[in-house]
Length: 591
Image (cartoon, rainbow, N blue to C red; front, side):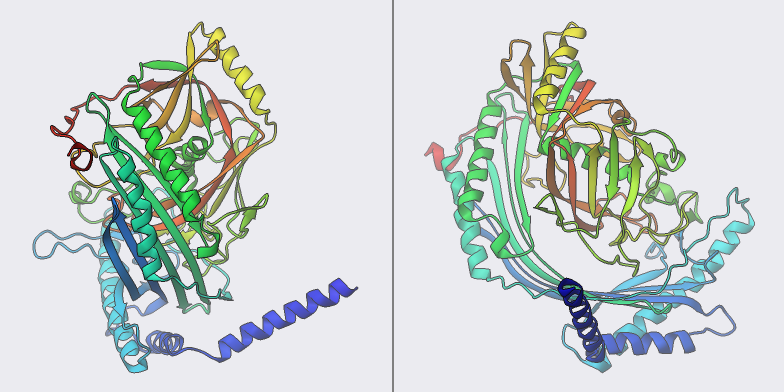
């Protein structure tokens, strides 16, 4: 009884706090609501369509960043910015100005979109905020009218094989979620970056390195004409270290270390980070002298970080819906190509993984078996509440993550809009029947014998495109495998494992012939799990820069079995031109 009363009291206090927060509406919130109300009532050009939907999303960032190389500061800055994203839709939910790309040659060659982005003043001046919001809304409305007219003209000359609404109807909601802002001292970031980057002075085999430390407090304010609103604040700190060198034959080698946390106190300390940097330096030094991988097709185990990156890069992108936008110029695609349509749109109800694997999206939880999940969020950027979604059950694809842009067969949002497009939060890949790690190794050796091979391979680390060293000529990437828009980066640390248990480190391996359907052939997985937080770039086909590497990075936590065994994976050495190693030695070590 006491627990019930306590729970009711906590709920009441939470409700009162939320009510109080709404009662104390900020100047920014008031400016957004007032301009939204006025625009919905008065925004109409002559006898043309009035907006049926308007939304405002403000992203305010206060951040401090410091980076260093070899003990010397590269960057130190404080950031305070406010960005307004305006979305104006004319027409109706079935057919509006969205999912359309218009391009005109000559002049500015501007790609017309349904909304816009402008910078707002960081000071709370009600009149100036209203002015900026007003101008942004007016411009977005005029663009929307023009695009809808062009879209209707294009559709008059086309036959639509399938009627898919342009915008989904979602229930209005209100959310207020605030966390105490973290305190990040720029001097402390500088000192830590200098200290940790200076560790590379003891690593003569590393040619290029960089350490970056950052902390941020981000505030989101959102309102739309359907009645949805939210006010959310988030905080986070990040550490990354990247390093690169070349093997004795000149082939490039890279590695990275990354750590994320919600507060400075929960980020690993300098002693632990120094240990990770030292281990990375040792790996690169060993790889420089390791033999080149042989071409091979056979048993391969992905372990730890490599297992999570395997799913993150090679499978998760196929769990995200994307819709190809209509365009008004046949030459458009040559300039701004869209993403290919996700082949999994036609695979719902079909097996895409072995029967012993399930996949869930769980953005609303922040821990998994006492380990933090940093991809958690409560509400997405369109005001749709985050919720659990069963994506794969017993190997069969059941659903995809979506935004309010419907796709073939899925017309409701899963609350997965993060940035310009769809992005996951927390992804759990869970086995129904997992083996012990010792059993996985036994199965590995059985496959080697069955295939009459001398050895198999174990991959323990894989590259991630978010962590690259930018200095030439060390950074040269060779082509990996690609299918349907998802790309698997190359392994960093890979061992050739013989039947007698001997391990031999090899380098510069590429994964060949892997794609969306490779994962269906997973042979065995362990019941132990691995958690890895990575950055995920959100993009959208309505953007002219889709597929160009632009977009917003979101944190995603991936949970997978710690060991993933394939019966046959192809590994091969890279092809292409190899950069030569520097002629003279590193000046710090060479005198």
